[in-house]
Length: 124
Image (cartoon, rainbow, N blue to C red; front, side, top):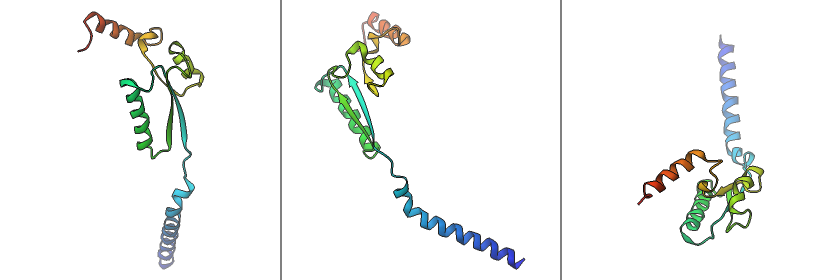
């Protein structure tokens, strides 16, 4: 019985030592690589949409401790407006900021709701 108690205490001490030794090393073992994403858009960097995209890219960097960086390709420099969904699908761009109403074949429900908004006079 006494031997069993020593065995359990020895196992607990071993796990505690391994935990305390491994805890400081955890950050060095698990260094995450930086992720770079390309965002293609049709808008220039000025204006409301451009400012919103800049804000979004900055916020993603802040919330991921700068591990995720978004490079924005402005004013159709990576792909033209009508090619943006295809650019995202093929991997030319990782993300796109586009107008879904230009692609009703891809976004049927959005196209129907935007037509309804146009018929009702839009959002004020």
